[in-house]
Image (cartoon, rainbow, N blue to C red):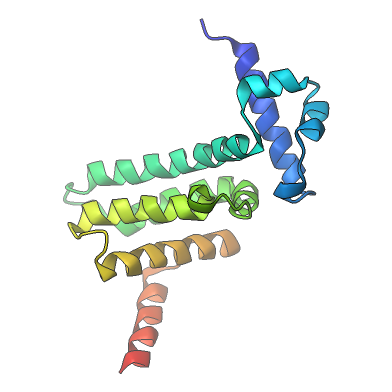
Length: 180
């Protein structure tokens, strides 16, 4: 049987960490502050995480795992004749992002280099698009698709909806006109 106390404490640490980020920049958050707010001692914190960076990484991983699951489901369904990638993404990602908007906005502000939220999203989208379109990761089309996905991400967070296909097409036509 799993130790529910450990999981409850872990959830509390993550919850208090996110609450702290609402008022304090990541580099100003302290383990002392978190342990006091969680009513735990430092040794309990260190039983869960090696540092604030590993805590931040764990919280980011929670959201990235949900996104990864959405992409994996899409890959499994891509061969179904009636499957519409964009409609699936629009519905699934909007729901995921709207359910986690505040958390995602906070996590995007934490600079962990290649482990930052956006960097992980970019890798995830790149891996996904290379599988869907059977292109190499260094193909320029993949870069464009990843940036389009990140732009959709920004749009969803700001407007709580995905852009319609007509909006995307219109935007792409506008970009195409720049190059003509």
